[in-house]
Image 1 (cartoon, rainbow, N blue to C red):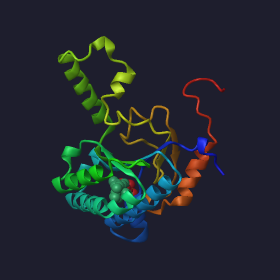
Image 2 (cartoon, rainbow, N blue to C red):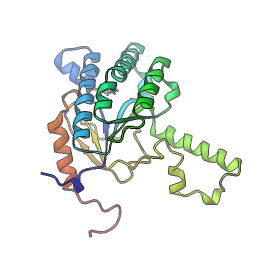
Image 3 (cartoon, protein in one colour):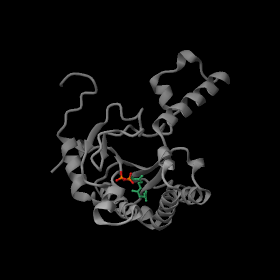
Image 4 (spheres, rainbow, N blue to C red):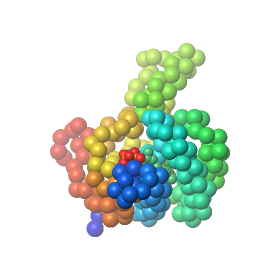
Amino acid sequence: MIENGCLPSHIAIIMDGNGRWARQQGFARFRGHKQGAESVREITRECSKKQIKQLTLYAFSQENWRRPQREINLLMGLLKNYLVNERKEIKENNIRLTAIGRIYGLPEDVQRELTISIEESKNNTGMVLCLALNYGGRSEIVDAAKNIAESVKLGKITTEEITEEIFKKYLYTCDMADPDLLIRTGGEMRVSNFLLWEISYTELWVTPVCWPDFKKVHLEEAIYDYAHRERRFGGLRA
Ligand code: FPP
């Protein structure tokens, strides 16, 4: 039993291992992504039930464009279907959908469905589900730096006024709290250009379980582990 105060408010997930899962089962890589979309559904529902405030999912990185065109097309198709098919569930669960990343770089049909889902759910008051799409942590920081430079040029702020708090206001995540817990499935020990600014003090939890196999029981294991950690944010034990 975990008291509500010990639950992470914001969980971010690097959903890795779809390809390996498929290979282990003797399937083509795409079957792994398809099964991964099922885990997205289950984990979103569970987080919402547990009253987690925000779930951020790394669904497509900037680096993922390096994959074969066929896999990219299949992933984009899967994403589009997900956006259309999940609208009802998102509405019923009072979830607000948002997205971060260079959204303008996605195929137009995906952008269109994303805009509809964001618009339709914008007044929902429950969990925020944020999809990181065509996302890169370094690009996010570069985009912020460019916009700050523009603000300085226009005389909206001065160089001396730039602080961490001001910088944060220029990030894609300007209106979000930083993640409390970052889960990575598939066992790799790296952050892969995900939320580089935002995870400075985030607790990390890595599991060898591949994303298509990641279910409620694993989520609860991660949350349990998080609840028993002591977060000092660079300070001393209380
Ligand atoms: C990493 O697995 C996963 C991705 C690149 C894509 C994540 C996409 C999904 C979970 C499905 C669609 C998403 C939504 C929101 C419906 P990998 O292919 O790198 O696995 P590997 O490291 O084992 O090869």
